[in-house]
Length: 220
Image 1 (cartoon, rainbow, N blue to C red):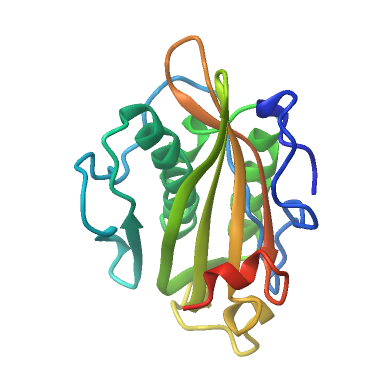
Image 2: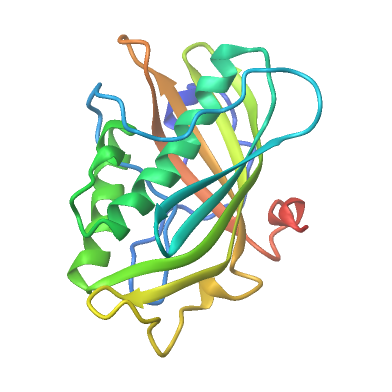
C-alpha cells in the first residue's frame, strides 16, 4: 500500500492493501481528482446521533444507483471527513455515466489523486464504457485523525454493477472480474486532508479485496 501522505507520521492501518490501479475494461481502481476549492453536488451525511446507519439512495442515472449507509455522528468535523470520501466515489461514477459532462470529482482531490482519478474516468470514455446497476457503500468510519489529516475507510460492494457499452447501453458480453465475488467486495482506505480553505480533499486511496483480512470486515 502506498503511504497515506496526508497523515504525516501516522502509520497506515491497511497493510497489504493495493494501491489504485489503472482502469481497463476488465479492471477497476479506487481513485480521486483535482484540487480546486469549488464544491461538488453530492449527498450529505446525517449529523444526528443515536441508532444505526442511515441509508440513502443516490440516483446517478436511470440505470445506476448508489446506496450509502451514512454513519451517525454529532461531530461535524468527522462527518466532513466521511463525506469527502463518499462524495469522491459518487462523483467519479457520475462523471462516467454522464459521458464526461460532469466533472465535480475534480474538486474533491489533490496532488497525485488528481492525475489518477482523471485517468480512471478518461479511460471509461476512451473505451466507450459506462456503468449500470447498483453499488453499496457501508461501514464508513474515520479510523484516525492527526492534525489536518485523517484516515477514512469504507466498505464497497459492486456485485450488482455491470460494465456497459456507452453507445448502446447494453452490458458488455465479457464482464470484468470485479463484478463477481470475491473481487466485487472490497475495503477502501483514503488519506484525506483539510486545506487552508477549510475543505477536505482526498490525497491518497488504496483498497483491498477479498480474501484480504481487512476486506473480510465487509462481508455481509
